[in-house]
Image (tube, rainbow, N blue to C red; front, top):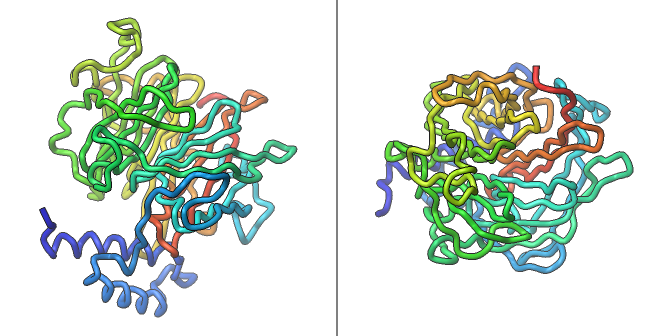
Length: 386
């Protein structure tokens, strides 16, 4: 059913706001500049075009080296702080490099990320139904140096390849011990299991039981974050509405599933998901989650506003907090916001580092907009949770 004009306009207004704030068009006091005001007016004029004039559309490209269907994929080094390019720290995190990835209009909109334990390859999924994989390059000091062998293709769903965003709005992914994958999708809220795919989710998936109570989940606020913990439990967090409330619904599968039935740790019924509450910072929403070796997790949160622009929070949650019925307030490690590099960071991945640290990767969703970027960042996190 076609959305009512008022609903469409509201959605487009949110898109327009995201475009403006990514420009950073404010003066030193944080006030809106005349340039911003003019841009706001121009973007509102574009609303009658159904947002097409504001945000470009995306899709999957063809395979072949680092080429997609509309040109080569390039990666350019970027600093953590353009004003202080020698800056290397964000709280306890050490910056090990960043890349500005340009995908020829095809590789973008990326919202979920996985990196293999050796740090050689990555897989990313997008909310336009895109799977991108490639090789990660490192410098002699272990920093992020570049990308190669990039390939992009459509994500298959239960009916195969689909052009309906409602069916392919993928938000996060996690790898399973048997080589398969889990992918969380919103709009048509579900979690899909793929039995294989060395370069990311492949083949026809099957849905696993989703958490209970999702009938009330907002269409564009579903299971944004999904991961598998070292003990085999699954964890997912609902994005929810942009309503200012700090409490977000979250679920974790019950302990012992790995020893039940097929022994694969998968939920068999909705009741295998046990609820808890995750508390975001005011006006932030969760976008992704990744495991830590001690059983805890890192949660990525995002906020956007007309005056403040993009802001992302990295939050550490201890293993002892991840229990059914808990109300979880994590430890903030740092924020990516002006003057630091910032954009719509939606994906996080972790892997063990060579010296016992945890390596943390972040990726941003550019919404296929010329006013946003696809950034891939790498940090090192030392020491156990406090």
